Length: 418
Image (tube, rainbow, N blue to C red):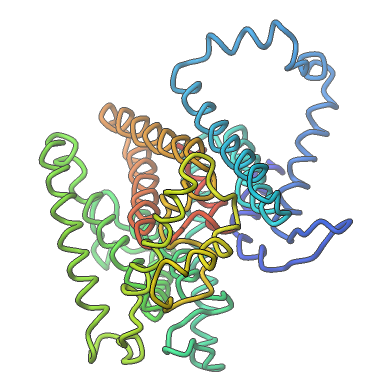
């Protein structure tokens, strides 16, 4: 029970990654320390049990042979993790072996994956998993409240009047809030919309929190977050039909993305709007800037398609390749504003393929389970996990909602919850 409480605390305290310091000259943060302390407590408890100590010889030949009889889905899952880590490490070694690259591997992959294993081994029942997701919702609510306080009392906004709270960018805030909003909506309104008179006091509290998160998300003016949340909701509402008509589903997605791209492109280049602050609509639009970033990224990938350039090295390569393009609209670009390009360019083809296998495994497992379920609570869990992944992958077309401490932790948490 104590370990479960620590896991819930860590999920709730995700924004504590912003509290930075160093231990023996190794950069870290408060969130990582909480995770590692929990991991060490688990190890200590493990070794205290005499029976467990004798079975800990995982490198023995007998234990190694057992790997060959693991379920196929487990082998695919472990294989995808190994491919991602292999791609990251090799890409780092072949590039400039930058300490920043090792820091990214540690903070955005190894520690969140270790935390994922803690979740897998301790959060097992449907109720516990739903409660963990609810913790993400409450954490988003607290962050939203703080951000709105910033907005009304300190007026801390970006130059284009966008809400960022205590984050460096409005997009960072939006990417953190989006999963929380979808969790709150599904937890409160699935499997059916409640009438007002059916609301308990707790439901009223959750509903108010949903409104607060929605307002905060709106004030970020992150069109990528809006699109990903709306599209995710559409998919979840129509999930039964889409599963039965998969071919139509593929056609619809193709058409939907064309329409969304046109809307996004046109709206980002409007000169005047009552919907968004006028500062957003300039010739220096986010769409124009992203198109240039993607063109530069593809040029870098053409020369580094196999091994990539290493995690955290995109900025330097982006600047080095400026000579092939007109003057950039943005110069400080630590990530390529695309999740898929980010994986390929920073972990090579091996890391990119590993990520794709992981996502395929994730959806296949959930879809297979969902089709055979009659339990409402379990369906709610699977739909919520699907919705969060939809948000991440859709937003991933125009940003990098995994390559960051808190977002990485949420991503790996939902992967292991599935």
